[in-house]
Image (cartoon, rainbow, N blue to C red; front, side):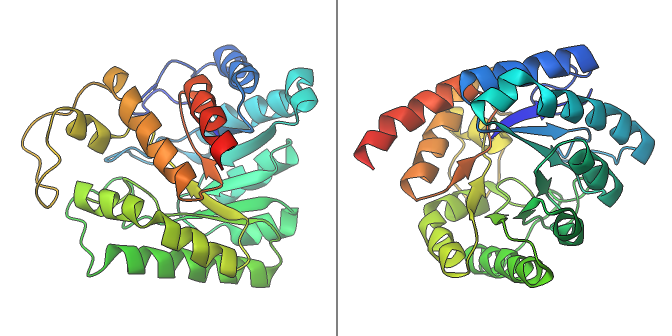
Length: 273
């Protein structure tokens, strides 16, 4: 899943693709690089992000989804378009414009997916983007995240959603220790999701802050970080390493910014699978 942020303020590439022309061009590049899904988002979910008015998000997302879903280069490669949103109105409009998957960090939009016949990704997040990193706490992060996403998946399947993915929400209301524990136990979530009849597990670690902190040697302790992370441009190695670990654990989809490099990882891993 290639990330296409049509936003001015996303943590990694905010402003690079916030015009229709640049967004469509980048989406086509992602398809050419080997993405199976192009995930179009018009509202940043970085820590501390403020919600975007509905009309702004619709204007950012729907024309791009429509253009990519109809592009010969996308259709010819069998690439899907997904919409990354928490607003039912945006999800409905994007599916009508050609998106076939709703990537939902709120894990609340299964009724939209059910009525539209679209696939749905249920992600775990503690709190909301504005507050999620204030003081995240869990008794057992692995068990709690697993129980939450599987419960939402069950509700979606009961409502008629045939394609349900679950995402542990790395970086969404988690400390570094939480993130690393979830990554370490991905195989358990994969098995549980398979037993529950889910399409698979999605994992997104690409360029996230905890990878930047690990890059400067701040990986010890219970998520108490005292230095600034490495810049986004220096987080490729960590992004690829965690994507590879997710593949080894059996994850069905990785959400990434660096599609070409991650495709190379997947090609190298796949012959041994």
